[in-house]
Length: 119
Image 1: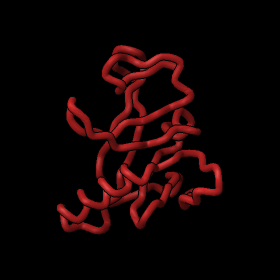
Image 2: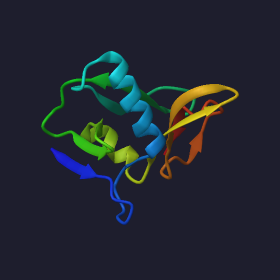
Image 3: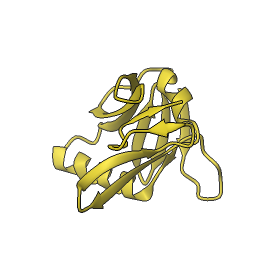
Image 4: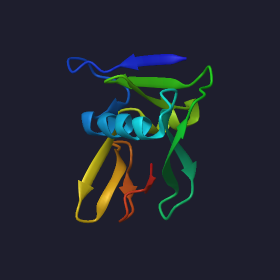
């Protein structure tokens, strides 16, 4: 298992924004389960070939990568990790609603909704 802790002076493989960490912390507190972690994953599908997914889980695999920020964990499996190196997981609120988003420099194209991408 690989563990990364956010340090503003270092480059990390996957960045977990302060806004995303704060929202995850709020959601975990609402659930009343401090064992929850945000899992980010990539699957085949969507209009561009790959799509992002988000889920809360208590468990982690030995080969998962963890990114810690402000006391909460983002977890990524090895297959998804290769598509997310250099990406930022963020949380945005706007007129269209609020959501977790992935700003991925590896994505050659994305669809209009922002959930699907190609390499």
